[in-house]
Image (cartoon, rainbow over all chains, first blue to last red; front, side):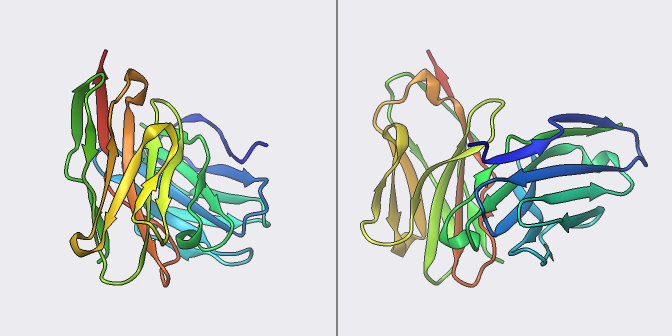
Length: 114
Length: 113
């Protein structure tokens, strides 16, 4: 059982470049989330998708876009990367709204923007 | 805004010492509470959760947490820590009208062998 799979695990970008972080889950979960983790700031929600076909902004959506491609996949796109987006990005999923279930996390993507 | 406070950023203990990590949330209604653990280089894993019932919750690896509603607290405890407990611990909560879980900033736990 793979759970939540994120690719890539590591990435270095130059300022202004774009990239897409991929996330897929095989647990038939309805809800999916993108968080960023920065030292001393915990996890901050970027975007989430409560169900297939819907997406909503979290606390820190600026500079990001998302696509809920289907029930399994939820991608995060950086259109023009900035050094402030250097972070570790985690994708998570839950059977329904997270408050009733808790999340299953992926292993993370460590992104460095130079 | 709803938030979670974790009182200690970094805790250093010796093996076999007892552990208590503080957590307070800010929300006046019914909550669901979580503790997650992140071992070095790994993703977050659920340690334990409280939804209702007995306010003393037991999780994996000998951890437990107590929900004290009057204090808005959900402190994590372990009677005797091991070197392998070195990790970062995140307290989190949610509530019925929220579409997400709100995380604290984390407490890094270092265990001296």
